[in-house]
Length: 262
Image 1 (cartoon, rainbow, N blue to C red):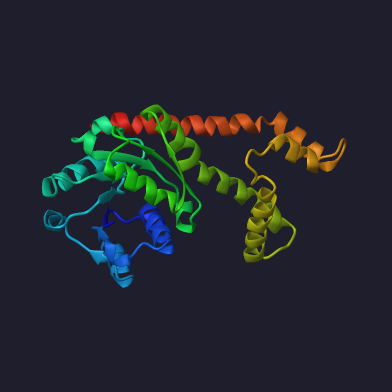
Image 2 (cartoon, rainbow, N blue to C red):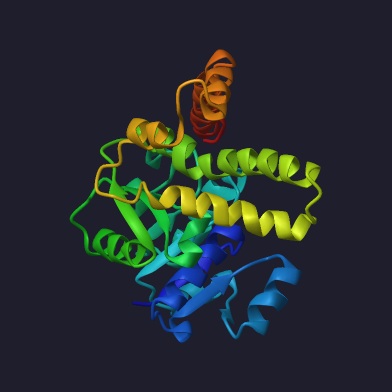
């Protein structure tokens, strides 16, 4: 498989890092990037950096479209101008297939940065789930995590809010833990390491086939104890509703992004 990344920001770099760690050959990865600093970074990593016009003389199995939503539709047209038969795999949030000039030649994906360490969760959606290119995309993302095939754009908007954006919500919670850790006098770098070790060990119990979170909570709390007091405080603060509101706001914004671009 030979791929090209049109736009090489954070999510593209996460995918590249992940596939390289899983045996993908670097000489089969090409990049198109307009940011001079990023171009130098990519060249320093020995990636082949192309000009847009070079697409006319290349034959890629997939071209990743990894740009900002405001640039996506023009970028897609530019790709097809130089490579009319290309198959685009977009990582752009919000913009539905019908917004693109050739929706039947575009596959939507919503990965997250955990792809870099082989722990990503990626959603895929296309009008043709049986195409060779869709199967290649499925295989590629399965090598760097878990892949879900969605049924429609509505599911993609929801997935974007929970998994695509949801990582940042978890990191926001981690920041609160870190703040409390620092209050007891630990150095910042030690506290950060301890926080991640704490969460990894906490999640270890939930790695079964079908984790029962209520049972996991009950293993920790005891009637009248400190955990019970903290959980009651969380319930009074309606923390669950806070997260639901965050998911809903992210989903709403995903839909708005699609409506903003024509």
